[in-house]
Image (cartoon, rainbow, N blue to C red; front, side, top):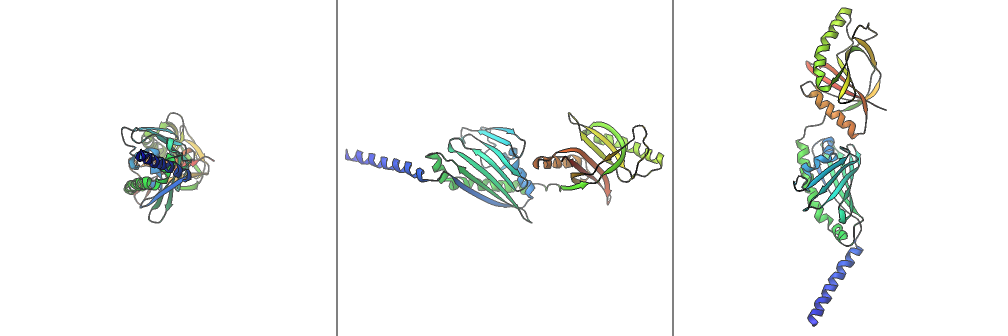
Length: 323
């Protein structure tokens, strides 16, 4: 009987301690890990800012076919949401609440019964790459089990964070450098050209058909254009564009038939360029559109310019920015 009383006393003591300890534990807990990645901050930032990329490097087995993933909200950056359901790893959700290219990403995490958390990524650029700091802060930890989870957070999360950062490093350092994108005030252009409605895939046919027509027209006027050919695109509905293919001119030139004069006013723009190849235009458009989305900028017109430098054919693309 005494033995039973002693065992009962011991069990009650352990239970009391188990309940008292979390009462004095903090309701918040923070852990972080860092890694240096020899890659552009833009590349690393984009791996984190697009939640669809997390399955490539996340330590939480998001590629597990038994886990259900639901993406909603924005495609990337602020407002992007990922909810997951898993019998093995539990259920939860993540929402990006702050995205500052290419330095900071903050997200709200919902761990269900374990409480809420703030997920933070810092990207500190250097001459040789970027230092990435991944921090996790738990708040409003539930009593008593959430408090214990917070107490052991470092031991639980540090190995996972280290694993994820190393995978992120491997992927980023194998990726191609992003295109250089510059902001500028694009000077006004006076041009003469032919207007049509096209889809982007029809661009090459438009260029081939109309360049010869314009060159013959200039020859008939005995007039030399002020520069190389360009294509001005204004988005319409259903992936169609109002396209004006033409050449810049120094002053007013006589119009005739389909050959009409127009002016592009000076305007702020973002711009990039590449040596021409079959996929160059698509690559530049993708990079510029992604840059617009990341920086929450909008554009109403696109200018493609075609010229030659040291025998290389160059395509330069500018997206005119809305105020």
